[in-house]
Length: 363
Image (cartoon, rainbow, N blue to C red; front, side, top):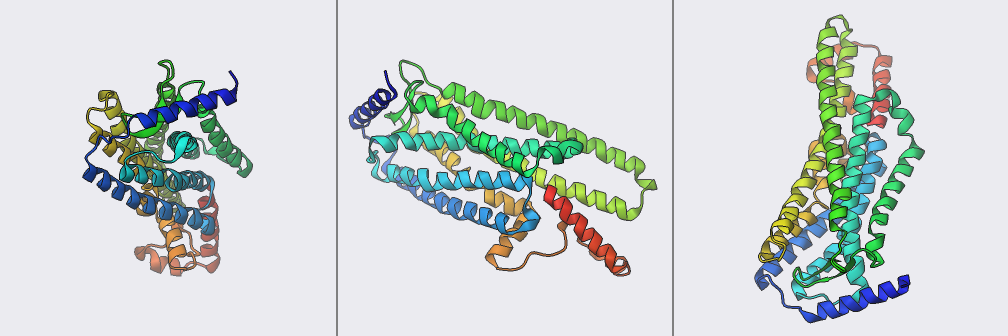
């Protein structure tokens, strides 16, 4: 059977399926409430992710290897909010699929791509932080600009390749699920790639992130202990500089950890619901689970702004049209040190700002 025949069979099966049953399982009022929430999430996701991409592109202090992965994640989330969420709103309001066969294939395809892509990009950022903190001697060799671009391209292509068999109807198919009243992955001859996708796109990245953060915590704890043991013989200025550098590295690492935890919190409930309620006896729970998944595409920009000072400065420079501060975040002088810093030579401040810029380029 040729690929064309596979697609024709896929389309015919979809048409037969979603014409059989268009009766919604949820109460009508609840569907309208869900549609309202998704509209709000869509607006927040589109504006927040677009703002983040533009701010990181414009604000030089926040750019670096990590920012490139964050921009890619924001692009993926923006496309999801622009493509999937409007269809979802329509489904809950009209309470049936009216957009034909092709879109019933593309809609779940993009949804599954985004879910896997988001976690794989978060994994890539976590590995980036792990190498920066635990293996600084090889960091600059690995995260050169051309290599970073190649990493991002490979992640996108790998994610798409995972779903090509399903798109062609070889291993399951994208179609209309009567129980969920939505286009999703449907079994073919009792076979579905959902378990495989769950392992490759969720389990393996999750354990990789957990391993990296366990190692990061161990390295940070060991470094702090070593610093306390050798701090007596260090010059105070060098000690403060190293301490601020480590704090800034840890702030960004903590931000990625919070993004990962929010991703798990958004996806785990729906995973549990699908396992415990395979026959969709409680459709309201499934809808709430999906709303949490939609939330994962718009919550990241909020996390960036709340947890990271450089990202807040980037947002402020775009929204308020202000120029970024020329001094590094890492070496801002605290009120207690203003007098001592004012007595230091002018070239000392310039040197610190330059070093701070170099460090921020790594972050």
